[in-house]
Image 1 (cartoon, rainbow over the protein chains, first blue to last red):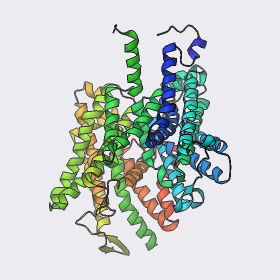
Image 2: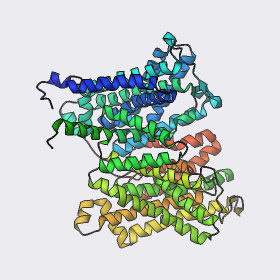
Image 3: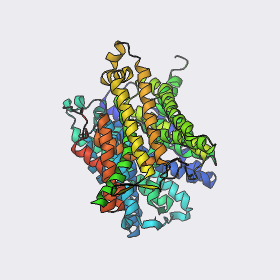
Image 4: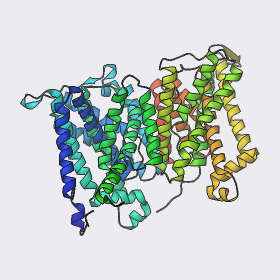
Length: 326
Length: 293
């Protein structure tokens, strides 16, 4: 472990040579492997990258800021449908994606207001109500959701003659890297520290000069921006949207990803997303086994290793650094 | 006027089921401070146990009590096997909520494995279509039975909580866990009983819902969410509040469906959740929730 001597040093991204080499190797592997392997790998890679962006956002809100929200699926739907409508109107896709994220962020601020008064279980219920209300509106208002037939989104045209899925993978992986680095930098900055202070003790945070109102709203806005972009990418990947996609199950999957990956951890969010995407592929046709495995994984992690996969990783690293000492 | 009364009675019957689900949620919230997201799945497991017994030609008088026991046993097992060890290790509120989500996922998978996802029709002693005439109203046998089950469930819980030593212990534990422990109350067993009782109330609701709907592994999701709304409306920390909330929500839903349209009926519960939490987070009859910075 390096000794941190100044605040500036503490803010540095990925300190240490070994960390940088490992990080570089991982990114290189992630960039090459799914493209070189069979097409199924590319598709799984896309799904993992897309899911990881949403889970990062969810982790920002739940893991770092400590605000329990079950309404993520509402933001997901808002991001996806804003993106779909803008694409239908002929907006270029990067612009539509940012707009989808911003629309979700705006909704996040509105939903964030109750968080100023409500705590713990009450906030969880209020956000759950929001998520289901969004689903009900989509299911009942055909003008927004495209009715029974749903909405379709034109596929991206890939540059340099790349296959479409490969291009989609590049876009998703690029965005994931962008969001992961942004999150890692955010949580070591003033804003990130304020989030964690609010999580640990609201009273102490406020007496140290942290503005509770703006910090909580910032957490909601940021997290729902991530989720909105997740929704937009999801819409682009599927090419077709219908309200049924945005049911409560999606929220449960995100909770599985966060818990298994590790609360308040960037690498945990990515590992957790890989877990929830890869496990169903393992079980193949025995679909009933997937929820059982997810549930058992949650129970096991919470009872035996509350840090999740990221916690394991941290312990393994410490062990290797200190070896042969314990 | 007759139409109004007719819809109100139908609503009360649905509301008594919401009240049962809400009572289970409140009982668990009051005793262990956990929001139980597995309440719906526990009820599903119990109801499917009854279905399995009845379709093997067991009489209802055997199947129903056994179903309640199965639901209660699953909840008690979860309490001792997962929740208590996690609480001992100092699990956070979020961790405990996620534990119940884990339980819900496991139960869901098990039910799908054992019974498949095809909707089944649950045989039942009371008919949904035979209507009895009471004054100007027509009430189906099933609605009457449902109302009766709701009242019976509430009454039994009331008697247990208010009139027995066990109930006294439950109230003591909910008031102050440490003090109750110091006084020699076996708190973990009392809490486990609360989980079992709550789950049995959910199964009771499931048994009376199944013949009105079709039985599939996800049939309790909607009633569970409605029960949640009812619990919030009445106040998460108040048992009488759960009953009042359930009956109010059921009646309001039925009347909204009659006079405002069916889409409104579906969304009403969630609008109620949002409105209550914004205006009066502690619910109609709840106390607590006084914290100032």
